[in-house]
Length: 290
Image (cartoon, rainbow, N blue to C red; front, side, top):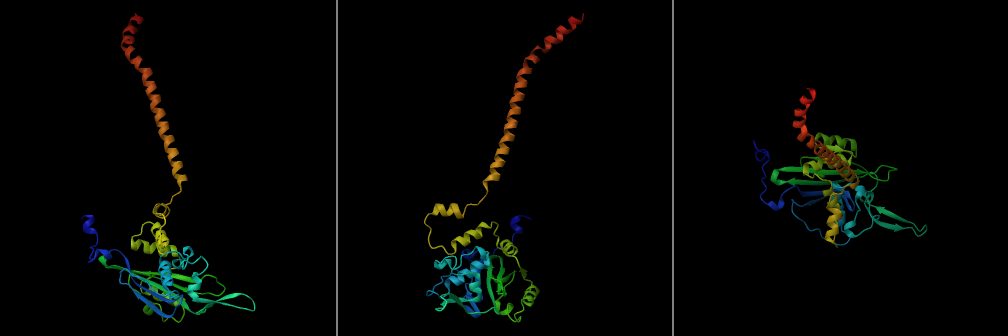
């Protein structure tokens, strides 16, 4: 059987929707999206996200980015031109929405929508309709006392999940939630690397640099120099030192071989005259014996 016969059939009606595409985004207690499940149904189509300043556009973009990129590498609210300190993973989980200044002390304190008793879920459902494949990625966050960054775990499943149906009703018992998800056949990971390796295999993302490019472009508003952009973001990064050493070693091997050839040629040139005198030597030698 040929490879073509072994490959699964692509049933996609519209090639413009080929590959895995985001069909649904859900958030619970993420930023100012508070207390209930907020659902955004894209159905694999392109979408234009509009709204007033502060309506949560960048918050949703950051939710999608967090599903695919390690949080420590993300500059949150970058789509709105924010600096690195304006928002953080913790501020999204606790729901920071404003700052209050204490006139007596002169200090500023962030005001949050939620305390440490709540939990946060972000979830994305991706579908490849051509191959009838579905992948759900989700992350669950909560705040532990005396811990700066939120605790979290990662969920991946080859089936469609939803926050309302599969991430509620566990009485704030995180261990019970993990058991419930595993019982559904979902993979539950504590490491982003294992979680990312899982979804990269399903999505067919062979090179991690593709996600780096996604991170660079998801909030990009303009490209000043396309050549510099391609050089810095699309060409594979590598350490030239090892390759240079390999080239030098390879050159030395070639040079050794070349010197051996020269030596052999010199030996041949020295021995060739002897071959010409060999018949004469055979003729003279018996006469000497007599």
